[in-house]
Image 1 (tube, rainbow, N blue to C red):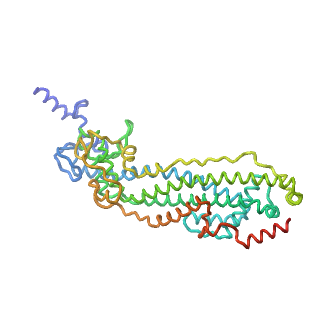
Image 2: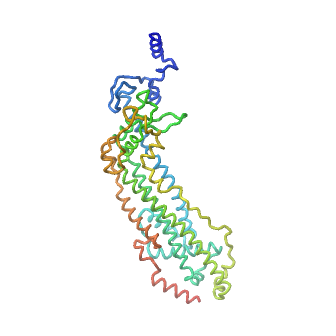
Image 3: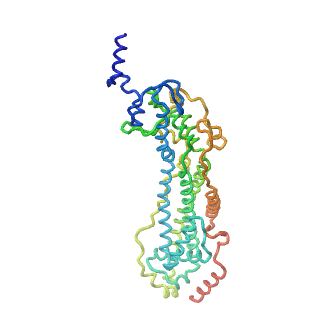
Length: 444
């Protein structure tokens, strides 16, 4: 027996590979790239340890700095992935908006002017006038009909088709409005995500993460990039943090983002609803164009005066390709909820959690505290990350959201939310209607 003890002592001094002490402090040495680390008597400020370990105050500070360099990116990983998803659809909706503008019969100067006004609308500044909307309403409908017929619709033909085109004009404006409001929603989402990620996490958050043993998810072929106090003891270096501990730490780190997460979810819910309306109006526009095209062909056969004025429409070359609709979103409300959800982050971003035999911030065992709710009151009581979270001011974004929500409701009710006073734009002004009617009667 004495012989075995002597042999073990010699092997430890020589660091003979294969012996139990050959890997002493190996995990934390590798993480911090410091081979001088060794077991020492308890001398800690951050870690809550009851025995000698690989960590002293200097090592703890290195762990803290390592965590500060990486933790924030990992905490906001899912949020940034969500941003990439909405950016994809934002680009698609921007393409639809561009197509509406370019296919209209507006002059180039007017197209540029309205494009600038649409861009302002998306940022929350509405400079559109009744005249702008009436002009866009007619020009987009005429452009859609011209594309379908494969021939330009002259001003005389537009006058002759005035009443026939009213349905298409209304649908085109609703289609335009739904795209603009959805792009406005994406602008608000972008501002929220920027606000959420622009400020650093608190010192209390980083200390909580080190104590809790949070570390980045790693595979057999990946090196550990950061970790916590569980690495201070060889026997606990491979342990996962307790699930409830991890959730309390991350909820505490995100306590300044409670309101942000709430509005990201609200926006996602409304964007999904708007997307359905965009598709609905796109399909309705296609049906209205086909109906109007059939009416034009009928008039060309049966109405001599129409045929005499609009015979060029007979010589058009109709497009062979039918419209393809692909409005499926690559995100939903659950994706928005998971962006700042501590349970999701603990399971899928960090190295996993355990319910039993887990790191409870001082040893392997059980974490006996409850999960503190992700509310202002719940996080005031969170013992893992005391103090206040970062102050994230989103008052202007909330104000913009309230205006956006009204516009979503207007669209859902079949109204057109493009004027500052949307309800007033339900029909052309009496003056414009009188002029159009006079032109129609003169032509016929």
